[in-house]
Image (cartoon, rainbow, N blue to C red; front, side):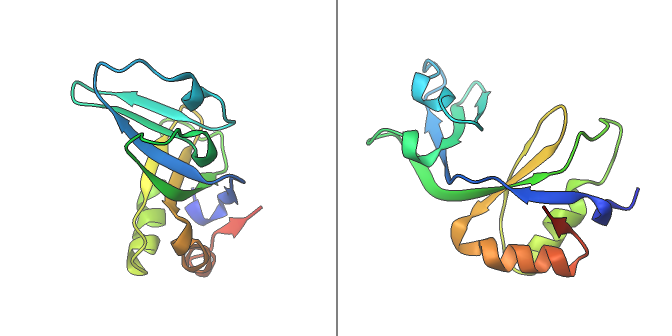
Length: 128
């Protein structure tokens, strides 16, 4: 598979990446948007959700946007994220990756979006 044939799209909202304690309940506000991700480990509860929904006082980093890789992608495919992240690393853009059953999502700081899109287009990716 030629990975540059994958179509990327930008989700319309801005997001926050939040950290709660490992025993915290999943807050209803985190579930209210169209896109969210929840990961619990023995050390933390990490939430990615719409920035506008996060209440004051929650430990979080705001100002993220999200690029979705067109899918669905077969779970047996390899090397989907590697060329994307390598291209972004070349221009100093760090990412927060989320993978689901169907596809992958790359969160990056809003301030880096223009540079990231230009680099990904230069690498052969298209945006819908």
